[in-house]
Image (spheres, rainbow, N blue to C red):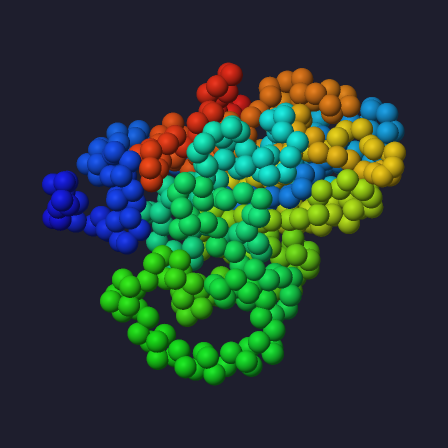
Length: 447
């Protein structure tokens, strides 16, 4: 049994690595001793976990709810645009935009939340609130739910891949790790997953061409001897976690998880041979490796101009990729343990802006927007909340991002009322805004 200088025992099996040492030091600076912190963690109630992983399909820029998960066929033409005929799903009473026919065939496998709302209209602040559940104006920079899950699941995660992976690029509008620090920043694959030569090499280049491989041949040969010694605990002990994971991706067996050429052409085509489709396929492969959090970032949804021209391209890609992901996870027996969520930082104005300079675009809209949730304990075949017939106002069961995040935490077995270690304050709540103004866990859509 080890003891620290405050006489706090560390039971055998608790790994005191460099990061834990720094974290403990930070807690001491904040006025919370290690003993107090361990007592705090021990007092956290045990929660039964239904899910093991989360895949977040982030539609960056904000999709319009009317054109995706909350169609309004009775609204005037300057709201619906050309999408006047929603498609019926395989669940009575649930319709989707006519551009999402494949998702309509599996509506029994997911729930639509049509009453998301936070009232924020700026990209940076909206992304921060939807991914942290925190309110604006606080002096504390809270971590995203991805970083928080990575931290909370760290001790039980035995995989060689990083616990928090984003495909292909990290968030650029806010610091996902927040006060947890850079160790909990998402590990970005980089590159283009749709490329035939895509390889996530752990150093951010992502896509490696034949020319690159040739150029790196001598480098790989020169590190061969290092590869053989890689399993040496002495070497590993000298690396921080990020460096360990990077070398594991290059030299270890986990690199195969990123090799999409391992999949059949039929499977790759099922997801769509585009960036979103192949990113979703990679996410499924990472779930099979036990990675706790995977974010798939899909850009191009910020459609101030040429909205419907852009949607004619983006929606079929989303339809194919997301329906394939949910169906594939279900067929492999993984959906019951994997949460899939899809949405953006906000919606877009229900009324189309035909005047110059927009000429048929939709602007930011944080008053009402929609999310799709599936798997991991969420029920299927339901709709939670509602908006009015033009999609401008939430009329039933408003849902703040804190509530959705709290529900995700609960399904993962994470106590969302607990606190995280803060390097200066000692601790800070995981979800500071949860429970305010009648907020609650979304029990209506938990199986």
